[in-house]
Structures are given as structure tokens and as C-alpha cells.
Length: 276
Image (spheres, rainbow, N blue to C red):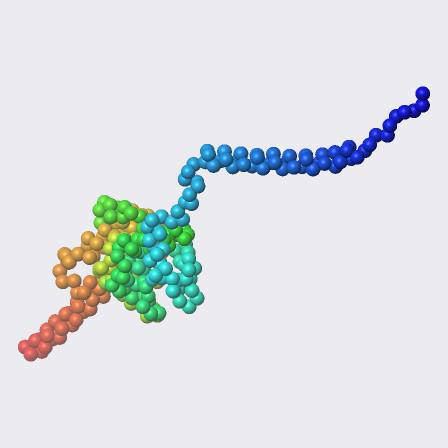
């Protein structure tokens, strides 16, 4: 018998060999899509509901402070408190203590550029001042007035506060807390209208020519002692030594003694001369 083998057609196998890789790639893509959908579904099912919501960027107080800032402070200090050249400095990392002093005493908003910001009637309420302080504090790291400052002052040591005041404060604010003149048109203000939070904020922030009394220089307890002495002794109307002579310290006392002594000597000399 002769060779009766038929030639095998390569048409169908040729089409199958080219379509096989396409089907494999398509099935791989489908499997990847299904896996991604399953992973997303599992995460969405098991993830806490709080994560699906955007966490608030600011606390409620700081959010209120931001609204106040955008109305009253943004012109001089710029957006996000970055400062504006020639108008106002940056408030980043300033801290809430500086805001409480400057805004709580009416020095800010600033009326005009001077050698030193003047104390004025307070424009914002105490609550609004703390809201502004909370917003500025959220922009960086800076000193903050503690909320329990009132309790610390109540338990303070008056004797130690007087000693610390005479060593650290009387050179500028005078022994009676009436303030005094400094160089270049600046001055140390009177301490008589200052509250406990304002004094604490000033010691932490060091406004104008005042040095910064950080916790490494004066501990929080020592600051409370000084505040207690200022409020209970200096701000009181009680003068155990007699007439206060304006509470300007030993200079007025020496001047008064000198004048009284000179007048007494003059009259004594005239009386002696008349007798002789």
C-alpha cells in the first residue's frame, strides 16, 4: 500500500496558538480586578466609620479663633499668620501666651506704629482672646498660659514672691509696680491693672523690652509667687509704711527726706541767727 497520510491543516491550530496568550492576559486582568474589588470591599467593611470622615483640622475654640483672625488680624499678619513685610511679623511658633498678653491688654490690634504698643481698652472678650490664642497655638509650638494659674496663685508664697519681684522686676516696674521709663521712647508699664493671666503671659512671652522668664529661669511656682505678691500687696490700697509718695520707690522717699531736712535746717539757722 502506498503512503496515504494526509497533510494536517495548520489553520485552526494557528488561530488557537495566537488566541491563547490573549485569553491568558485577559483572565489575569479579570482576576486582578476581582482581587482589588474584594480587597476594597473588605477594607470598607472592617475599617472604622470615623476614618471615612475627615478629622477636624482645628479644635472648636481654635476654629472660632481662626474666624476672628481672618476678620481682624489677617491684614497685618497675613494668611495662615505668616506675616506681612512692613506691617506685622509672623505668628508661627509664637504661642498662645503672646496673644493673650497683646490682645488681652488691647495692644493688638495695633492702632499705629510707635516705639511701643500702648495699652488700650480690650477689643475682644476674654473668651474671644482665648479662641485667638488657641488658633495661633495650633500653628506651631510656643508658650501657653496654664488653665490652673488661679489655683496656683491662691496657694502661692507671698514672702518668696516679694523677694523674687524685687530681684527680677523692680528694676523696670519700680518697687511699687508703677512702671518707669526706658530707652528709645519705651517704658515699663504699670502693673496695677494687670490680671494673673496677663502677668503670666508677659513673663512667658517677653513683650517689647521685657526679658522672657521661661520655666528654666523661673519655675511655674515662682511665677505664681510673684503674681500673688503683685495682686495682694502691690495692687492693694494698703500702705503699712504710711504715705506712699506715689509708690515710685526709694528715690521719692530720699527726695522728700532731703527737702524736709533742708527746710528744717534753713529754719533752724534763721531761728538761731534771730536769737543771736
